[in-house]
Image (cartoon, rainbow, N blue to C red; front, top):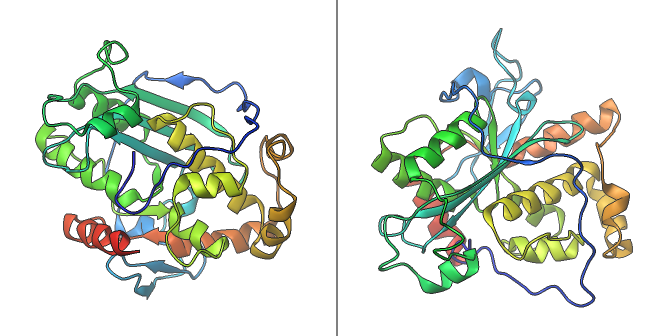
Length: 307
């Protein structure tokens, strides 16, 4: 999936990197008991004072430092790393054709579960052929694809109570808005998400919004496949892990030492002290986007397309 002006695929230089070992987690399309709900205002409140970005122009707004009794602090919820593949770039004409999601939790960021679902497009007439090629679409590969409403229900069952995390997430959410409207399924978008692209831009000192593959190459994150929704969700998860594991100054020192064999050194659950955990949560909260209305997402798309 290639959001306009944000995600550009770059071929990895030779030699071919070794395959990753992500442990024993398996791809799952089984449905859990669905209990999706919209995020309440109280659930956006963190344990400590933080600032959250507003989606229109990154205007920062102070929020309360204490959670409402009984509510789950934002970053104590499971993280759901989400990515879609689409049949083109027009959310009204084109369709979500693949859903990929990874569920994890701070602070150790072990994989709890994965979801990979191929979705049948309404039609391939009028689809962007380059988008189909990039997604690996073929009638044979999509033989067991499910209708979009079933795909969305599987996602709904996979992600109850979770906090959405993504790369150029506004684009995925625009297609999610369109798909849920057509399917009559509510409660999937939520009211807040974490934008990893902005966090990576700040940490890696990019003047403009970087593409996912560019950042993955810089961090020497290995792909198991060239392109798919689950693979992009996993690569986003791996970028997040690197940013979470290393503080800003530490990461600057680590970057020059990375090579394509570094992945093995950073595999497995992450362990850190309370001070580092607290500092990282305060930093991460700056990249929580709290406006997910259609107008806000369209404004974000327009801003990113100018980067």
